[in-house]
Image: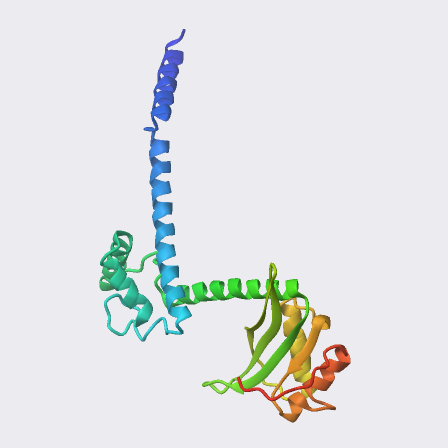
Length: 248
């Protein structure tokens, strides 16, 4: 047996024993990576729960500042600060972010910015919307409620609401769900009707299964000849419930 062979044999046995004991460098790195992954997962769960808490109550998330311990940083960062006093994972993270802000050093990632908050909200909204669409597709038939009004920035916001019967085993309930906001400024019945069909297609909802319409009494919406109601009746004669006055 050559000297080189003996040396390689000794190295192999040492590596084998270390692997069995899980004390090799690779094992230590894997353990460290697993711990870090677990900590980030727990951190994201806490951040998401705070966002859900504020969203369920219709409360604003962020203020005029994005700095930790600034009184004007909004509800989200404020709650994170309070929870960090009792949660070691949040405490360590908030401390790092606060130090980086004081030293004006940018962390590679910290998940506390307004951009990340908006991404979380968008993901949650998309998940809820998907569940509602699944319920609509399962119940098959539905009616639509559509109305438009300017928001605070004077943009015309068209609101889409779907009414349907939710089937849960042997239980039935009538549901009315907000589904979509559409920034659309066109005014004629034909243009609005085309936009409604476009949005329903976008949401993968078959307009042919629509059995009713509800709008306000504006002539462009409820008009018998050129209103949205009349245009959509041409597309789907089954959607023939009369337009009614609504307030959204």
